[in-house]
Amino acid sequence: MAHIIDGKAISARIREEVKQAVADRSAAGHRAPYLAVVLVGDDPASASYVRGKAKASAEVGIESDTLTYDVSISEEELLDVVHRLNSDDSVDGILVQLPLPDHIDDRKVIDAISPAKDVDCFHPASVGNLVIGLDGFKPATPAGIVELLQRSGVQTSGAHCVIIGRSNIVGKPLANLMLNKGVDATVTVCHSRTKDLPAIARQADILVAAIGRANFVTADMVKPGAVVIDVGINRVEDATRERGYRLVGDVDFEAVAPIASLITPVPGGVGPMTIAVLLQNTLLAASTS
Ligand code: GUN
Image 1 (tube, protein in one colour):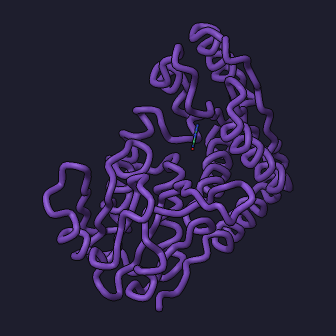
Image 2 (cartoon, protein in one colour; image 1 turned 180 degrees about the vertical axis):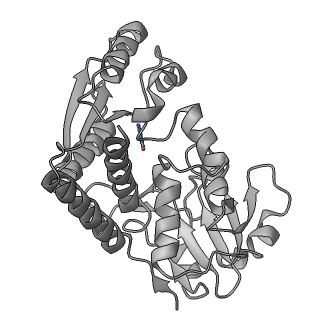
């Protein structure tokens, strides 16, 4: 039976490290790092994520404000907001919560954020730095996965890491992080057009599932002893729950856990790591400004 990788505990350790670094900066006479979060509209899930980011920031001594705008804000007005934050020296990090309403082009807004304040690591300049292995902001979910692996003692050097999913937020940036010097994995990325995906998945020493389909990874896709990282958060109907659903990952946990050496649960695996990386990035933004 696999050991469980406890994302909550590892995330708590990283948040404690950031808290200490913020306190050290303060003792050396620096002001607190400051994160500006931009939230458009009243999507409950986005509002809940944003509250989580603000709360976690406050807990480590990072100051933040959430600038909330009505769903009717124009693209031009939102770009003006970003430009103002870019030129405000008291703002270290800028995070525009996605998705944005349909009449606003996400890409235009992301591209408008100063790369020096891009704590989401979504700007093309940040992505370019990541690809060529330069230090800088890290993408939240992929960097969270690398932290989970390294802090769990997983040998990544020379390991075959198979990533299922090629999204811009997880699959592609994770492939680059795993490939970079110091992590040194051999990387394969699979997607919806991949031929005989189960056979490739079975070759993985480290298998990462990031496709957004409940219980997609079954036992026959996992090599005995593999490390399995589940990025999925899917709702499945469950009449026994008060809210009518429960959250499951992209991995059939019950079937795969007995085969894997280490596995992340959902929830409580990768999820808690994303905010920890955001805090690391905000600290970095303040340290380099
Ligand atoms: N929406 C869901 N996850 C994220 C995230 O990590 N950053 C931003 N900006 N929006 C999101």
